[in-house]
Amino acid sequence: MTMAEPIVAAPERRAASDVAAPIVEVRGVHKIYNGDVVALKDINLSFEEGRLTSLLGPSGCGKTTLLKIIAGLLEPTAGEVMVKGRKITGPGPERAFVFQDFALMPWATVLRNAAFGLELRGVPAKERNETARHYVEEVGLKGFEEKYPHELSGGMRQRVGLARALAVNADVLLMDEPFSAVDEQTRRKFQEDLIRLREVENKTFLFVTHSIEEAVYVSDRIILLSPRPGRVNNVIDLDIRRGDDPEAIRRDPNYLDTVEEIWRGIKQYLD
Amino acid sequence: MTIYGYRIPMMASLIVWCILWEIVGRLDLLLLFPPFSDVLVALGDVVNSRSFASAVSITLYSYAWGLGLAIVFGVALGFLMGTVPVADRLLNMWVNVFLSAPLSALVPVIMILFGMGAPTVIVTVFMFAVWIIALDTRAGVLHVPASLLEMARSFGASRWTTTWKIVLWAAMPEILAGIRLGVIRGVKGVVIGQLLVSIIGVGALFTTYSNNFLMEHFWALTLILFAFALTVGQLIALLEARIDYYAGARS
Ligand SMILES: Nc1ncnc2c1ncn2[C@@H]1O[C@H](COP(=O)(O)OP(=O)(O)O)[C@@H](O)[C@H]1O
Ligand SMILES: [Mg+2]
Image 1 (tube, each protein chain N blue to C red):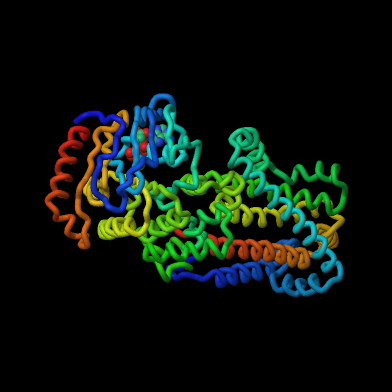
Image 2 (image 1 turned 180 degrees about the vertical axis):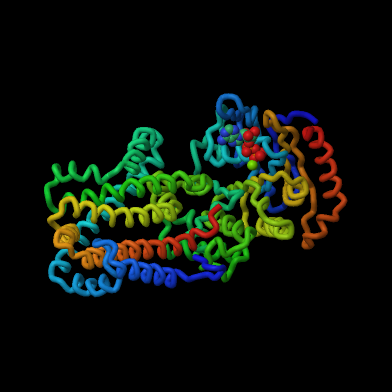
């Protein structure tokens, strides 16, 4: 496998997003922790509008670091990130983050949690609650608006985190292993919902995962990272038909072959 | 409490202690230790006396002011220590020193500075209560989950907003635990302060009772104070339980 150059949009399918202008660009990003841990080395990537791109790699290869740099939560040691053509200096309203551990306020109801991004942006209570209510329903939590996080299962909590990110109507959704803390059945349901969600919401998704199956199942493109130091190892464009039957994909030979191929590529880093 | 494997409820064990007290009192071994029944009779006397009413009002006044100031100042100090590392390095040692110092020894100094009245008692209550509140608040602030802070920042929250909307609430269980301990220490402070000043409030009553060998009254007053401290502490504990419920399974 070859080290990837800055990636250019492969001209193809998804009718929903045939214009593929880069909305996020990562240029020459390095990240060194504490002067000696090289977490990321010379990352150059671009993410096209309306697509779902996965960052895939074994744990410790810098996925979270890269996503947080794009979110503006971490400063790169070198390099820059452009969002909609502008260099970022911190978090911004065009990006929203979904956290691995949900990051819900335990003292607030589902509705207030879902509306919290809007609350921080100064949207009046009535308006933000209305918006939040809509997204709570969209993620399938209608009826749970007045519950508290500890009354929900892990999967439901992450749905609240997702509703909160959707409610601020950002263009780019940054998701850090959003399904890793939920059980397997819930996880599958989540993946199916994510695919459905993309049909309703015209957003760009950056999705971090360490699960090959998950990445292949949900993504248009997979960026494979390799560890020590974290580098882009390969970029894989996928062409998997996502029809009406979500289960059919998991039996699609194309899907199975791709999973197998990626696995063979990754195996060498595991020793 | 268990006796021969039977669980004895709290109330029952209290009764056992009261009976023991009664018996020891009846034995007439110690002048300072009247039977419990006599103390109960004196309780009525004490509560109904005019000096008691005025003692209670001045005591509550000093206590409320001292504790109120301790909560405001202690929580603010704890926030400062929890959020500004330099401040923490400068202050941590001192706060710990004050927390474990024998504060009663300081009361005469406070008396010189603040005179023989309520201000000295207020300062004493404050000194007894404030440090534990500050340290518990600090611990709470330091334990706020990093991802909550990151979440607020990712949605564009300023430092102030984060403090008000996240840190204060996330640290609430610890803050309340600190206040509960401060409440109880504050009762100690109000009694010790008044005893040493000895001309106001409950302290004056204690002094009168012991100077006149009114041991029944002396013990009755002690009982009242204990009951007060326990009740206030219990009320805060109830509030804490509620908060813990909302704070949920914090892991
Ligand atoms: N705050 C930090 N300080 C020092 N090293 C860190 C820090 N965060 C992450 N690292 C290191 O950087 C590397 C990449 O971490 P991370 O981005 O969390 O990887 P991933 O999300 O792929 O598991 C790891 O080796 C990790 O130990
Ligand atoms: Mg990670």
